[in-house]
Image 1: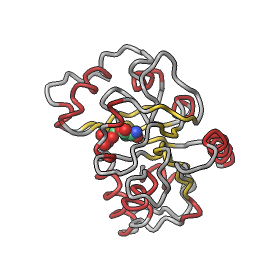
Image 2 (image 1 turned 120 degrees about the vertical axis):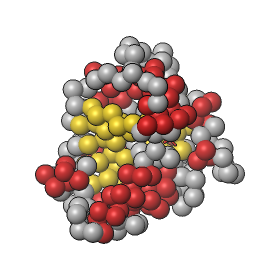
Image 3 (image 1 turned 180 degrees about the vertical axis):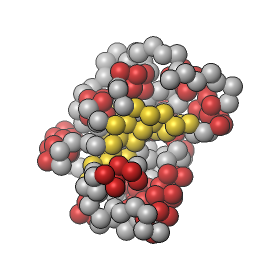
Image 4 (image 1 turned 30 degrees about the vertical axis):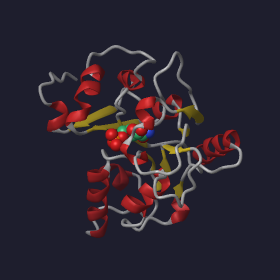
Length: 224
Ligand code: GLP
């Protein structure tokens, strides 16, 4: 990521939330403080957000990104585009997000976590997958995500970038960490493409990097 930001300081990054990218965000913050990378021109979009949670809600993905990257790395708010989970009109919010992304020239680097059921962003398993930003009905797995554990508001829907947004990024970085991700990682490695496991579509991308830690990869035969 630092190399990409050096090559193109105004890069558009689509960034995930959750336990997985915490190490990445603290490393990026440390490097930014050390002057090894600059976020002065970067543009940031969040991948997804819970419907019904305002950005001020501590359980929102917006609050998470602020806490773990935007504030500590001192990224100007004017460079950050976050989905508004409390928008009055969710469809209009999706269209506005799509337009904001297009205005910035599209995503340069999309960073992803892996859902327990193979979701990426909030593109949940189903008969079909959606192309652009959309409102998604959250799966049972997503509703049980630890980020919602203490939330008094129980979202049923989320806003997310679509599979087309992710796949049209010229570079994708999929992060997989923790022993609990062994099973989905194993399924991802098969490889077989199915809408019932959205991350499997990443096999169709020509510049997608998978980074997994030892806990997630334990016992797995990983092939490129
Ligand atoms: C959540 C989010 C995803 C996230 C994934 C993995 O439900 N919708 O954007 O990448 O699940 O989260 P974690 O890294 O906490 O396992």
